[in-house]
Image (tube, rainbow, N blue to C red; front, side, top):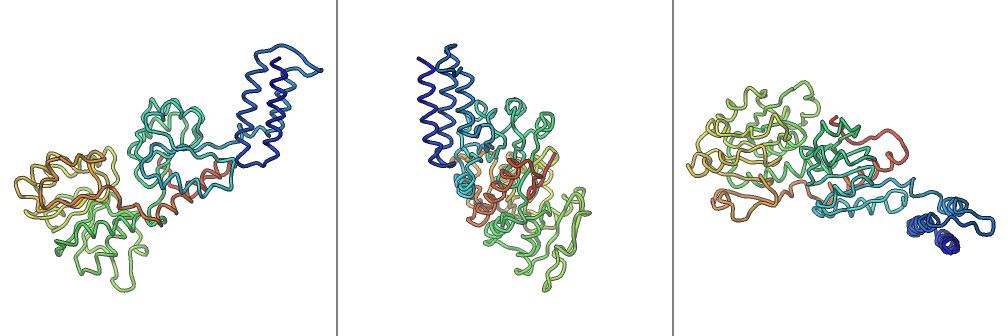
Length: 372
């Protein structure tokens, strides 16, 4: 009885398969799984076909496509253009499956996926331990602070981000920083963290005739060629290291945070840092909310020492609209949209799509920056 049902399902799978490799292939896989379940329930042999024979035929008919799918997981519903654009880019490649899953469901399904785009998800050791098929965890952008990189390395999972200098992300973040500064632009700007965003910001600030000072942990990777313009020359008037941040803060009218968030930089803009700033100086954060010590910012706004705050990122997101910091008239906040442009999201979708195709083919992964 069950064998006959399996044969019916196999025939139906055959019909669906003839419809093409795209939409119907996954239905065939489902039917094959159903056939598998039914035949396992029966030890009967009919017309010379054992249950194993039927499974073999069904498996052959659908081309064993299930085992050759590369599954890409997007975590959570936020920034829907990320997974929608990636699906659009990969629509001609039915062997790459792109799913977006609610954040609470990720731990329960992550074992099924080979590649994960975290977005706002926090992937700790517990979640990563369940990702038994995972090859790559990456960010739809540059921030990987939500990923336990040590745990990923332990489980043999590569972690990567998309370089902001090629997607337009750094440029749009730099423009957002200028937007936040426009109302009270002064004469000297301190760029705390001179990476891709810092470089693009300095290029744009030159048009305002300001003096640019900047710090970077290591200027060994600083290319004079990449930071030169034919009109303005060197983009940075004074360069310093981490040990110079308080001195530079005391000399700047505006400080712009462009650092990556990690153990070394978390809370770097603290009470000591803000106290070293000029009274009335402005603070702009275009990177990550965790770079700023919340209590230090709030207290210095209350005292009037901090002249103004412009942030595109917050300590928790979404940020509480009733938070005391938002009561100050000299505070401007935007909802983490600096890097959200049509251009950057289309480009990042292409990067994610290309990487998933490389992963499927077993080729070297290019176009991303590994952090482990």
